[in-house]
Length: 280
Image (cartoon, rainbow, N blue to C red; front, side):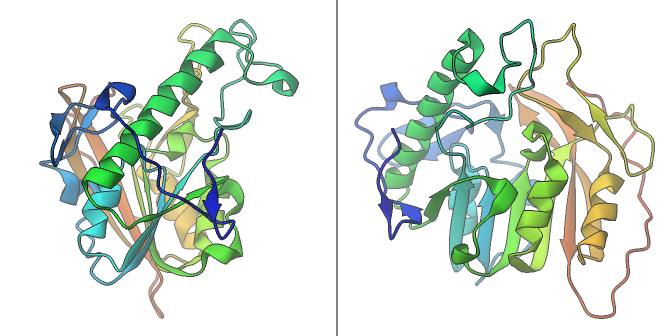
């Protein structure tokens, strides 16, 4: 069951008694605990990951905080961070509807072994967030709800970050549209490079009958985001490529920083990524 909200919008911070009740998506150093290990280690590459954007004095909308590493990093300079996460109800994740994994019947969500195990995993990740929230003395606000239709009550934002989250969404363009409606200046999108994609505005369906990837829908070309963000009015754009550490190994990623500026224009060009890029 979810914790009570404050003013029916933001979550009341929750106390987690022990690190043993937690899993961590990000590797980070927690005061009084030390280093906790996660799948992603962004400690050396966080500025590249966020496109070297200056968050000073900004109100930030973060989609998908996971363990909160980026939340707390941005909070060091931002005016305020609002982190949006999914409620732990029956529709808490966009599962790919695999028939053979009992994920196809959306009228009976939460019944399959995959869903039960994953709900436990996400619950432990969320415990890790709240433990880190307390240890880092965070003041970020947390909203539980669908990113597909963010409420106007969240207010206006200077910048939104969507870091390695849209690959997990059935409709990534709907989430971008929802964010764009509340963001006055900049949207930052970070995703993994897929060297099999052409230099065009395309995405590729990730799950197949063989690979059973039930938690991931897509891989993207950088221009997929550049073109659609320009449609939404974010026409002043910067694209960068960088390497990050996942499961103790390197992967290649890209970041699009797209802003609204009067008189700016999307030219549509996309620099080639490094030739060493490989999908993990």
